[in-house]
Length: 232
Image (tube, rainbow, N blue to C red; front, side, top):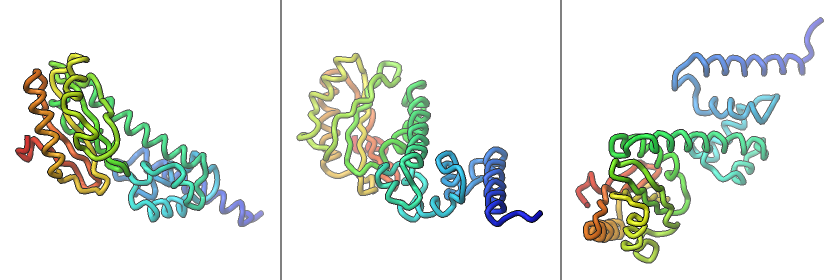
């Protein structure tokens, strides 16, 4: 007896999901295109049916896979076919990525695993729509002892006070620190204010025995190290 069109569609959909699963498990990092990764993530929330149109609509709306995963849950639900369960499934992946990257940083000396730190900061900050300032405090073994969220807003002395940054380090026994902030514009090039506040904090640190190793600025277009540019 011939299958109905509905049963045939269900069978084809199940076959497509199985084929994606096989490629995912047997292939390498590039086994699936970005829209196929989203398709697969949406399987958990959308039990039946074709998730490809939803995946492609998400990429059209946000521009990239990482932007989709970092998007606001309410914005995700503005895309047709994405409900609360789908948005939660996508956000859980972004959360897992952050946890994995943070684990890589916390388990090793930071200066000896610099790329892991940059990966963590990029995952965590590159897609923020507000400017966020953080101070990473390190102990004598250069291990992370505190990832301190100073605040949101432009990095200047109105938002970040050099002596308070150093005092926090003294209170927790830190011997060094790394300043971090993001540029929501995407361009990570430092401004004059970025350079000035970094040098003021470095000067305060020298007086009290805390070294400023670097100031890393993160953006969608990459990152900049003020140390590497000779600005500290």
